[in-house]
Length: 477
Ligand code: ATP
Ligand code: MG
Ligand code: MG
Ligand code: MG
Image (cartoon, rainbow, N blue to C red; front, side):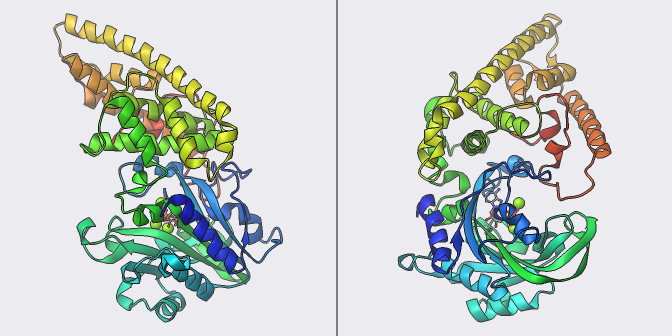
């Protein structure tokens, strides 16, 4: 089943059950606590907070989401896109736990001919919050799920709040068992790769008081009106229904990998390091296009910095795979072709989107060219001195000033018959990270769950300094 169809079926299922279909909000909403919209409920916040009265009691949407906190996961896990579509159904004081569970179960397990996704009910597992026996009973009664496939999870996984005083409540998540070839038994508590999380049902039933973060706050008491907020990962359902190995190989993402194979001469599916790069290109190209479409321009801070980082990672990854020509315009074109049926603005605003992406590529290629000059001059000096080691501090300057990730420096050094003082490089990186952390700490925001994008928000007015603060050593760029 194609991703567009998965999306459509979700909306149809809930519209048929009386929900109002609401269009996705922009990725950029005027919310001081959010860099990008990262969940379906964001546009409904004023309703959940009781600041506005919703014009409907139940709604459904497929929301564009960007999670910058998942950047490091891209291509490494099987399930994290930076851009994905979260399908959701929402109840504002209308149905509660039983309704939410019945709806979700029907859509997942109804046959394909009957408008559902046709999942085998025996392969579905659920989690409930520690003491949420009510949800547990409903799962048994309405879905016939046996005790063995219901797991209890604590505050960090299965209790939701906005990170600020307001509604909160337990969640219940639905997982699909991909089978013994993907890991050991034991349910989602044991292995989230074998057991793939597909849907999160949030039961807003309490009022949250002050406190910090996701799992350390006071619960004041029941809300006057109970609400439902759910989020299903459309890409994750596509991953399962299309029988592929991960979210990067689904119909809307994989074509970029194919294009990258064509342009770089490398093959996907041969070695893991290259595969991660292919997936990074495919994932980030889509995210970058969606961000530009919603008005983001590359820059040195905040949203612009995220976009810049995504675009540069594409360029870098393509280069490391062997691209010797600019390839951005081809990637952006493939994204338009796959995504425009759901997001027509990608076609109507294509020239602008393309211009922004290609402009950043050209600028970065120039930076890379001057960095390469610096590298060569330094490498010549090292060799002339009869040495074999490229200095850690020079590698750091390449990283910090020219945006050279360490693996590029390593590769170039190896081609020049040199090694790199990686320890020296890493200790300079660690120092810089420590400084950035102290800096961030001193300006830490006093409220809100900033965990996903905190590092970007906290950058404040700082200058662009390469990927330093935002890249872990494990990242493949
Ligand atoms: P995970 O534990 O896999 O990181 P999550 O618990 O962070 O997921 P939720 O915040 O519960 O995810 O979001 C609701 C749903 O959105 C998830 O059940 C999943 O199907 C989907 N989803 C979340 N993050 C991503 C992502 N990075 N890429 C694709 N789908 C996602
Ligand atoms: Mg997550
Ligand atoms: Mg999870
Ligand atoms: Mg979840």
